Length: 530
Image 1 (cartoon, rainbow, N blue to C red):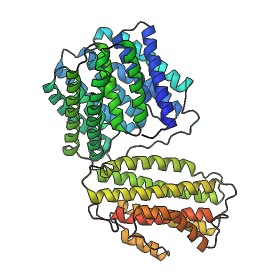
Image 2 (image 1 turned 120 degrees about the vertical axis):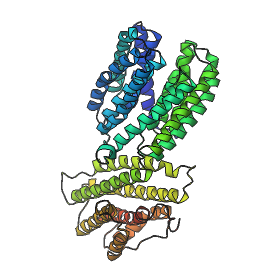
Image 3 (image 1 turned 45 degrees about the horizontal axis):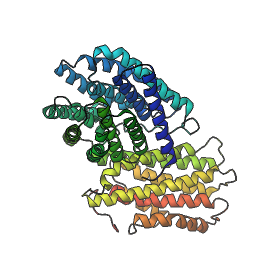
Image 4 (image 1 turned 90 degrees about the vertical axis):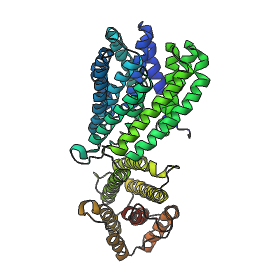
C-alpha cells in the first residue's frame, strides 16, 4: 500500500477517538465488558458513518443508539431461548441489509444494529448489564464525536463527497437491495446452522463473516471476491495472532498498544485492501479475547473455520438465491458514469458560453465517485485469479477508456473554470458530438437494441475514424496529442483561445467511440487487437 496522507490522518483520528471513548469508560468505573462495548460503538461510528456532509454525519451518529439499544436488549434477553435468538438475529440481518436502500444513513444504522447483536453474543451480555452498557456506548459515541466533529474535523474544510445512491433496479425483488436482503438472510441462516454444528459457543463468527461479506457489495462477483479476501485476511491474521497476541497472555499495556495498532490498520487499509483490513480485524479480535482471558491457539483456528463457513454461506446464497450478476451491476454503473460524462460536458459547454450559473466541478466529483463504483464492480473480472480471459481483457479496456474520459472531463472543467477561456461555435459542435456519443452508448437500454453500428456510422459521418485495432493503453497515451492536432486542424491554437477545450473534447470523443466495441459486443467474444 502506497503512503497516503489522507488515510494516515483518518486512521490516526480513529485511534484517538476510540481510545478517548475507552479511556472515559475506564475513568467512569465501567467494567471491561462495558469498555469493549463502548470501544466497538466508537469504532463503528467512525467507520460506517459516511454521509456527504458533516451535518448529516452528526445526525446519523446521534441516531445510532436508537438502532442499537433495542437490538442489544433483545439479544441480551434471548440467550436462554436459542430458537428465538436465531430468528431475531436473522431478522436483524435482513432488515440491516434492506436498510441500504436509504443510503449511507440506512447502511450505518443497519451495521450498528447487527454489531450490537453480535457483541451481545461475543460478550455474553445479560439484561442486568444493559444500563452500564448503554452508558458506555453513549459515553464512547460522545467522545468519538468530539474528536471527529470538534477536535479534528477533517471533513469541515473538504468539499462534500458526492452521494452515490445504489442502483435502483425497480420494485420488489427486482430491487438490488431487496434481493441482497434475501440473500444475506439465507446465507446467514446457512452459516448459523453450520456454525452451530462446529461450535455451540462461537457460531456467531460464521454469521458475522456472512454479514460483512455482503457489506459494500452489489453483485455475486463482488461477493465471491470479498469472501476470498476475508478468508485470506483471516488466515494471515491467524498467523499474526499466534506470533503477536498469544505471547502477551492478556497483559494490559502491551495489549492496549497492539489494539491501537490494529485500529490504525483497519482504518488505514480499509479503502484499498480488504485483505489487510481483515488481518487487522483478526489480530484485534484475538487481542480482545486475550484480555478476556480465553485466548489460545485452538480458538484462533476455530475462528478461521467459522469465517470460512460464513464466507461459504454467502457464496452459496449469491450463486443460488436471486443472483445479481456482475454483468448487470457493472452495466448499470457504467451507464450512470456515461450519463455523468454527458452532464459534465453540458455544464462545461454552458460555462464556456458565458453562463455564470454553470459549474462542471460537482459533476466531475460525481464522475470520480461513479468510476470508483465501476472499478469495484469490475474487480472480480480483473482479479488475477479470474479464469475469464476475454472478459478480463474487456474489463481492463473499459476501465482504461473510462479513465481517459475522466481525465479529459477534468481537463475540460479546468479550462471552463478559467475566466479568460473563450467560446466559439466549434466548441458547441464538439460538445454536441460528445453528447450524441453518450446517447448512442446508452440508447440500447431504453430502445432494446445495441447501437454499435449506428454509433460507428455516426462518428464516421462526422469525420472520425474508429480505432478498433489499437490497444486501450496505446490509445489512452495518444488521445491528448491527437486532440491537440484535431484542434489545430480546426483552426485553433492548442495553447490559446478555444484550443485546449477542443483538445479535451476530441480526446473525449475518441474514448467514447472506442467504448462502443467492448460495451456493445458479446461479453464472451475476444476483442480485436487484445
